[in-house]
Amino acid sequence: MKIVTAYSGGLDTSCMIPWLKENYGGADILAFTGDLGQGEDLPAIKAKALRTGASKAFVEDLQEQFINEFIWPAVRAGALYEGTYPLHTALGRPLLAKKLVDVALAEGADGVAHGCTGKGNDQVRFEVTIKALAPHLKILAPLRTWELTTRESEVEYAQARGVEVPVTIEKPFSIDQNIWGCAIECGEMEDLWNEPPPDAWRMTKDPVTAPRGSVELVIGFEQGIPVSVDGVALGGVKLITQLNELAGEYGVGRIDMVENRVVGLKSREVYEAPGASLIHLAHTELERVCLDRATFNYKRRVSQDFANIIYDGQWFGPLRECLQAFIEESQRTVTGEIRLRVSAGLAQVTGRKSPYSLYDTGLATYSHGDTFNRSMAEGFLAIYGLPYKTVAEIRRAKGHPELKK
Image (cartoon, rainbow, N blue to C red; front, side, top):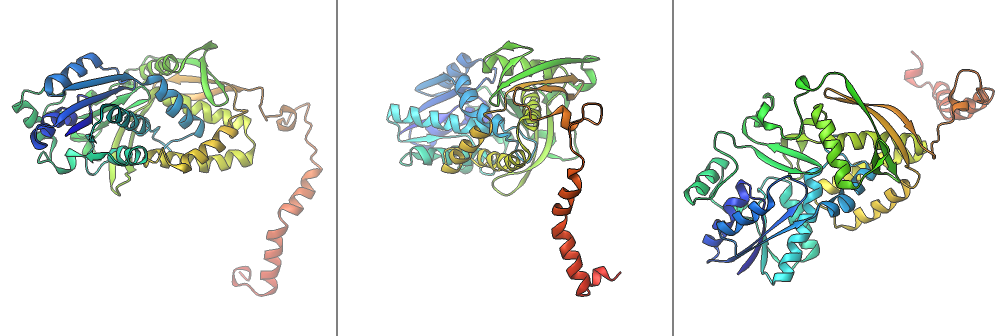
């Protein structure tokens, strides 16, 4: 049997290669690692996969594709799961699953394996994607079936086979990082009352030790996509990396939340999203300037639906395609610049401008140059309040109890 396994070099996937070989009759294991900007030594990960027992190991730089085909659509959508989480892990899974399928088809594999747990979200994202793209492939999920039911037992299993693992029993953090953010789980953070320990963070400094004062920057957008910082045009990788470094230095982008998983349970999630936090903040403000009231409010509802689609692993479903078509149309005029001030643990909008701004100074001002015709207000309020006035008159005439008081 030939199996292509998603491989990160972390605790779970480090155990998977020997476990699959032991439990599937010496199966031929091929490892695939996608570079989503996790900042790891990928040649070393490839070498480790081969050293651990994989017959082949594939490493592919997916950063540009990840940004252009997944991150930017999510930014344009304003996709924040439960209004908070920028979905960095969730956005990477459909791309990794697709590449896993591509390798399996190219290598003539019988199945694919992933290192997702039985009570996590990622199993949904991987398996729904695989079924959508290659339903004939067998899907193996060792973490749902093996005897290694705790992280401590996984560490012991790996150590017994001479497999290096990046965690210890004393520090069993699970880290999933890419260019869009970082997810940190387990250990003492499973107690909701415990504050994340200082050594859990990867991308952000403690706001307490951040530089004093503040720094201003300007993010430029074209049709909802960030394209520049302080007037300098940047590609996606450089732009996000630069904002990650700046916001991370000031401790901006730390998220500590209890969220609702796809499988029905609540989990404590600790995230870092320094650059994503700045981009989403700026993008939303630019939409406030460029979109009319009805479109802006309706898109807020679409944003929630789009975030749920990403979180629930339904990226390759038809609803995402339909909603994305609406989102792309809504972004045609979302072009301009947003100025932000970043200080310790905080980012604030301080300025905005756009050639498509719907803000009319003459209509908005209360000073000289006011062009708003106040005489229209009386007629507007008469019509606007007419339904409520009618209801009240009928209820009073019929003796509605609430109107007798």
